[in-house]
Amino acid sequence: MMRRIVFGAVLLLGMSACSSEKQPASPSFDDVLTSRRSVRNYDASRTITEPEVRTLLAMVQDAPSWANGQPTRYYAAVSPDKVEAVKKLVGERNAENIAGAPVVLVSTFRKGLSGFFRGDATNEVGDGWGAYDNGLSDAYLILAARSMGFDTLIMGYRDADGLRQLFGIPEEEAVMAVIALGYRADDPTRPARKSLDEIVKFF
Ligand SMILES: Cc1cc2nc3c(=O)[nH]c(=O)nc-3n(C[C@H](O)[C@H](O)[C@H](O)COP(=O)(O)O)c2cc1C
Image (cartoon, rainbow, N blue to C red; front, side):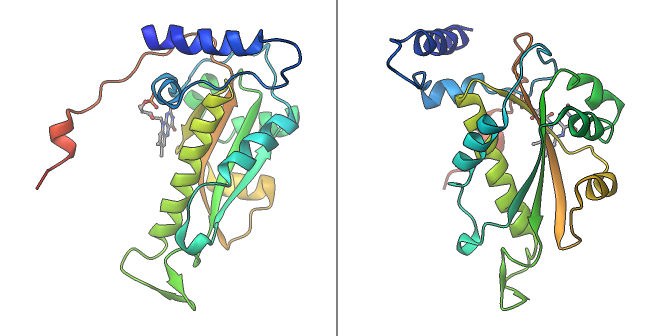
């Protein structure tokens, strides 16, 4: 709770900073990490512009990838009709949860790139490395979004064929997550995490 208050204060301070400053002060990385949540209730009165989405995705381009192959692609729905069309392809529950989100992004990756050398899989993971790189990009995306004051919901429940058709996504790309982008309408709670000892073994 304290961290949320500090994060909000940093954002407000930045926004009300002297008029000669163009950019609000950035929240700390710790504030970004701890205030980022999967948001399932968006403020429908707030919009996000295409230039803001471009700024966000330019930050995401700093994500690492296998041999810098950069296999991730994004399809950004920013026009109301496309946003509504994507919302029909994420299942009823997800659609309800992201009803107020002004932007929806679809992430894909080019197959046969990460984890491959001259067409051959480098090891047993194969195209799993493409999914790995895509996840890294999306991790950058949800954190960079939070640093800009936005909120997100990653959705793995989605109609890949419907999205392929809607955006003309080629077969060479694997359709991965749909990510809603908007502003939280209320403060989400933090789902419990496993204990550290359940997920790490020290040697
Ligand atoms: C690959 C992936 C797929 C997910 N798919 C959905 C989804 O379809 N619907 C949903 O409400 N949340 C989805 N989530 C969000 C998770 O439920 C959420 O990250 C998890 O409960 C932890 O909560 P937090 O993000 O607030 O920390 C997904 C998350 C990931 C990483």
